[in-house]
Length: 125
Image (cartoon, rainbow, N blue to C red; front, side):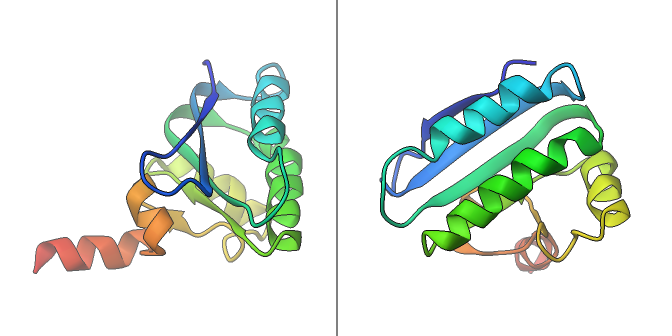
């Protein structure tokens, strides 16, 4: 796996947390720690969670994601999730959180607020 966080190249306010491989009970603690580290500091907080390289995800990821989402909202920012495989969508749908975690196709699309379906439509024209 190996999730890590880094600052996005352009806006200093944006923090990106990337994860790969499997996110389950054994790997979520490291992911949760990365999410926590990405939220350091004060002020507005914008976090993109990049799950494009995640091959499996179970519900254990929901608690740390929801905690990060709530903190971002409390700091007048947001948390957005990038994913393309069916696993994350199934987990979010089963938990009733698709509205909280809609799909973005890339980190840049998440930063600009372009949902995955709209990004595909835009690229097709």
